[in-house]
Figure 1 (cartoon, one colour):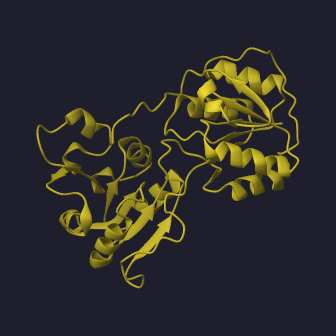
Figure 2 (cartoon, rainbow, N blue to C red; figure 1 turned 30 degrees about the vertical axis):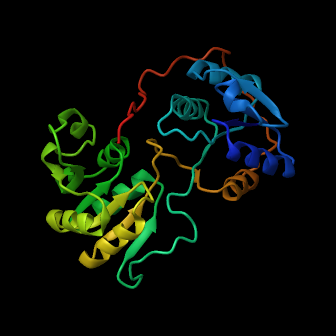
Figure 3 (tube, rainbow, N blue to C red; figure 1 turned 45 degrees about the horizontal axis):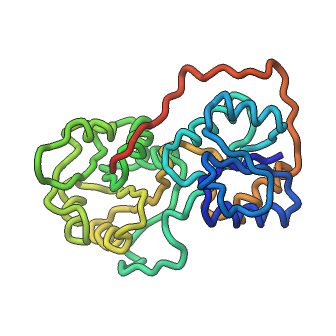
Length: 284
């Protein structure tokens, strides 16, 4: 049995249609009736997610895998899914929207720009650790922090913020890089603004979790010889993360998780994990 955690919308209906076509056994969970509205056919559970509640659902329905397609970054539901999957030792797969839209043309010269998409935060940190030079983030604090925690030399990490008003120390500290490396600039958008940032910081890597301004980012990086890495914005590390339904379903099918059932030993109750915290970040 596959359990799908969803916040509703088009992707829920599309995934359900694909799972049905594959003959999968699945249940969808929504946190509200508003999210579940218009879902269509299929078994549905509605209610707020907690660690214990989700663990009970998994055990009662003999769930063999959890598919998290919740769209909100660092949501409580996604945190519960990650904790339950780890503690009960079942696979967790994450579906996200592509960081870089498919078929997007860019104004930069491809021969001058090195770019890639890497959804694993640990892999991004690895790239930083193996690069001689500095890295600049155009990313949310929660994503920078997860990556920065795995970087050997955080003094090589920089975050640009827009100048104006009083410097927000609390926000700057949330990035997890040295406070002096959260630098104010009059402009942090457009090719010229980004080019100024890359030159000022001596960046060899530009890391971004957004496709906004992608052409400007690539063009600016191309002029200074920096490499661009596009990553995800979930706020959590995922071993199995996909940006399209076909790839996600292919993984589930290849690993026999669409119709399998899991037997669970031990007591029905589950203890709340003591060592895991929600990344509570509501600011860019």
